[in-house]
Image (cartoon, rainbow, N blue to C red; front, side):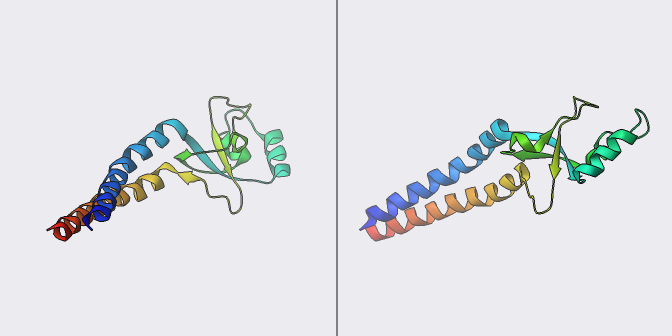
Amino acid sequence: MARPWKVLGLGAIVVGLLVLPGVWVVDRTAGRDLLVVEAHAQDVVELNRALWEQDKEGVPAIYGTPRTVERLAFVPEGKVVKPAEDPSLEMYLKRGDDHPLQVQTLWYFGVPTAVGGVLTGLGFLLLARRKGS
């Protein structure tokens, strides 16, 4: 009767040990540092582009209200803007109810998931040991 608890325990420990390396792999392969910009309407962007002067204000202000540089995961290429005014800059245009997945969120949930998986696995192994005796 102890065998199912042992299998569950080992499985939970394996999952717990693989969560953080999995988050790290997602961060390294699918994560990008992007300037998040609350996007203006397209007609406002065209007007700002026509009125923009080289040294007057930053390029992100043309496209919207700049927020912070964040590391985002699984960002569709269509959401990333490389403005002609500064091709070295990469921005994420956030519109309406758009909530991109931040790598910070993956780490936030990954740590307690890993700890919980290992502790649950140890609990199942302890239960298996008691059932086996």
